[in-house]
Image 1 (cartoon, rainbow, N blue to C red):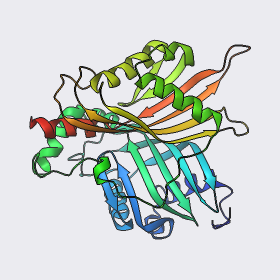
Image 2 (image 1 turned 180 degrees about the vertical axis):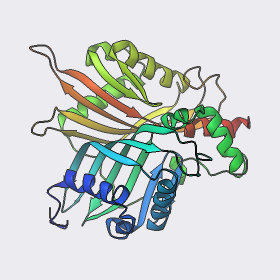
Image 3 (image 1 turned 90 degrees about the vertical axis):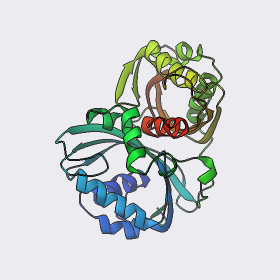
Length: 329
């Protein structure tokens, strides 16, 4: 790969090895090399600028979860080494809460949760990032509800008028990556499915999903089949029925020994004006940052269908926006 260290076999290897080197091998100092000094990192909880913030956050997380592992499940990527490459990286993380930190005093709880991260890299450096952790799964395993955790976080940060704002388009800062992914048909197929669902065409689910589809959703929820997919997507869209849906990035890939697969980064921006996953409508302005991975396949001579899906958004960040608006802290 032109511009990348020759020790990396390909871009997937780069993403997986850099992640392990930083977190599990304690190579935190390598962030000075692997991350650009002016990197912009966007999470549902906010936005940070610069490598210093990344290093500080990494150290704080490892102080709270010193045995954290990051198991790379997939890297769905697009681009070229010359122009820059964008990876959508899916991680299964395990950790034990043995240190005090943002989640409170050490509990000794053993956690398992997922992360989806879109990272742009060029010349051996990551310089733009969008990252979603399954905060709902984390806090539930700690004994909180996402709503109660968000309420406590607002209080600790000084109340609704002073707390750290969650990410929204109005506070975004442009980074070096302005691409939209690639034109692979699998990315188009997953993008079309999400667009149909967000237009309230729930009939897309039994048409596109396999009856035995394996589903991984926020809160560490595992589901299977059409009904589970319908409940999840209906609950989200019903909470924000007038919100604008947008697809910001799409990738499709065909790789040897892997099923056809796709990664979509998307958002909902609007108002909490419906009954659904987030309770009674409050009129709160809300921005939802989401990432979806999907794998397609067929059994025998049947149609090609969506057989596995992973979707993440941060429930605690959504509740924080609702509670900041209502003042119900």
